[in-house]
Length: 316
Image 1 (cartoon, helix red, strand yellow):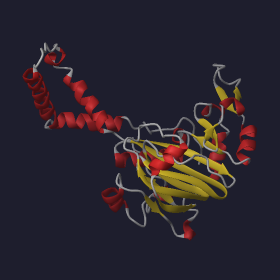
Image 2 (cartoon, helix red, strand yellow):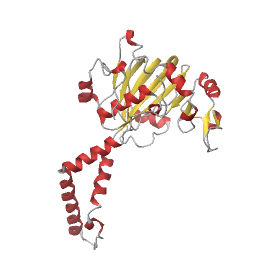
Image 3 (cartoon, helix red, strand yellow):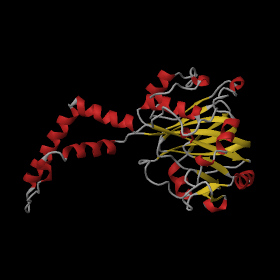
Image 4 (cartoon, helix red, strand yellow):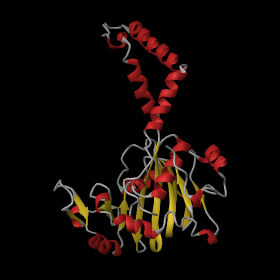
């Protein structure tokens, strides 16, 4: 089920560029900032209100050390510094955040990260579903909350495309020329990351109401310009060619001859060439099979969340 996009975003999500132009010329090719008129700083209200996330944080069943992180100077703090066992959980190894401790650490300049808030927050759930319907991939929303003029993470890239919605405050995003060849690779240590990031390219000053799109692999870093910043990051977990390859090979294993041993001898290049040509013929046949192609697209759609309801109604 595809839920409707929040009312405040039904029109103008990609303005002033426009939705059609974005998906045709920008998506997957380059970063882009959708900067709004200053009078529209409240355009994410009430769907993504500060109060709605504060209410959400008070639901005990929502949060544990698995989806709550505190980051200081690029380092993730150990969960036991701000989490403790809960009497509401049967498993004693599951820790839940102590929000008083979280608030104290947050006030000292840390960044609070709430992962997968789209499972619990109505506005985030509906916007993630909308992005999934446009991109044919899974979208996950994470909340980033920083107090003080700090940065939570060092220069890095993401393994997925990202849409950033600046909800409150301001954040400066530095964009670099460098793009990681394989975004799935771990981000290198800071000094090496800065070398690979290449030359500084541009700075985007995101204010409340603005949106930033970053394709996977683009080096960037962000810091709070004022004393407070909250933004939502929608990560698109895209299908990769290697995923398609895995589906192709899975389909090929249905054929008996694929599992037969190759009795190669020294200088048996002809036999090996014949095998590769046979595989090539099979792959070509699959690429011309609309049923198989639709199966790949169906798997991409099925990777998206089932968004016909929430784990908890936030009332946002």
